[in-house]
Image 1 (cartoon, rainbow, N blue to C red):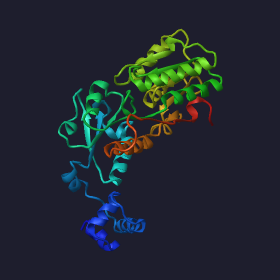
Image 2: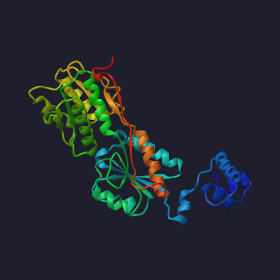
Image 3: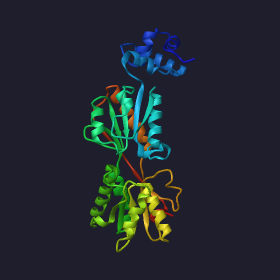
Image 4: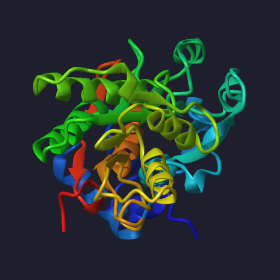
Amino acid sequence: MAVTIRDVAKRAGVSPSTASRALNGKGRMRPETRARVLRAAKELGYRPNVHAKGLATKVTGCIGVVIAARHLPVERSFYSLVLEAMESTLAREGYHVVFSVLREEAPPKCAQEGRVDGLALLGTDIGPELVLPLQGELPVVLVDNALPGVDSVLPDSLGGARAAVEHLLAHGYREIAFIAETLADPSFARRRDGYRQALEAHGLPYREELVVEGGRRPESWRVAMKRLFDLEKFPEAIFAANDSMAIGAMRTLHDRGIAVPGDVAVVGFDDGDLAPYVAPPLTSVFVPRWEMGEVAARRLLELVRGEGPRARQVVLATELVVRRSCGCAG
C-alpha cells in the first residue's frame, strides 16, 4: 500500500492538514514540528501524488521532453545520457516524463493538449519558430541549444574547442583541419569559432580550405575527408566537431594506409561511449551530458514552480581527455 499523508501525520503526531503544510513548505509552524513531519515522511518513504494534486491545481505532474527524429534511436544518441539524467532527476521530485519525437516543425501534441507542465527541447534542430510560441504557453528549457530570451543549458563548445586545438598546437601541429557535419548547427559553429580563436591566438591564419563540412547525411565524414584529400597538402591534424566525425575520419585514414597518430593526429568532441575503445583510443573533449540533464530538469522545475529568474543560460565546463589518437599520450 502507498504511504499517505495520513500515515505521515500519524507518525509525526500531527493532523493531516499540518503534515500537508509542512511537506509543501506553506503556513507558519514551529521549526521542530516541520522537522518532525519531514523526518516521518522520509522514514516512511512518502512520495507526493502529483496527479491527485493536479486535480486541484491544474498541475499534471508530467514534463515533456522533445527530441528531433534524426537523433533516433535514442539509445545510440548523444542525448541518451541527458534524457536518463532528466528522467532520474524528475522522478525524485515525483514527476513523470512524457517523451515526444519531433518529426515536423509543429508543436508537440503533449504541449498542445495541456498534458505537461513544462517542456525540455533537446538539440539544435529545434528552431525559434517552434520554441518562441511554445514559451508563451508554458515553461521551456533548451538543452544543447540557445536562443535569446529562452532558458538554456549547454556545454562550453567554444572553450572546449579552443582547448583541443591549443593542445595540438602545443605539441607542434600547425596544419590543423576542422571537420563538421554542418556549420548551420550552432554547436558546431561555436566549435569552429573556438578552433579559429586558438589559431589566431598563436599567430596562425584561419584558412577556409581547412574548414570542411560533410553535410547532414550518413557517413558525412567520407565527404569531408574526400575534400581534405583533394587539397594539395593534407593536414597534419584533424579536429572534428563530434566523435562520430572523428571516428569516421580515423576509419577513412586507416583504409588509405595512413597511420593515426603516426601520420595524422585526430581529436574529437563529446567523449562519447566509444571514444576509449576505438583503435587508437580517441582524444576528445568531454561533454558533461549527465550534468546537462540534471541541470535542465532542475531549472525546468524552478520555472514550473515560479521560482528563480527567467531566461537564464547555463554553460557547463568541458574538459579535454587525452588518449592516443593525438599522439600526445602513451
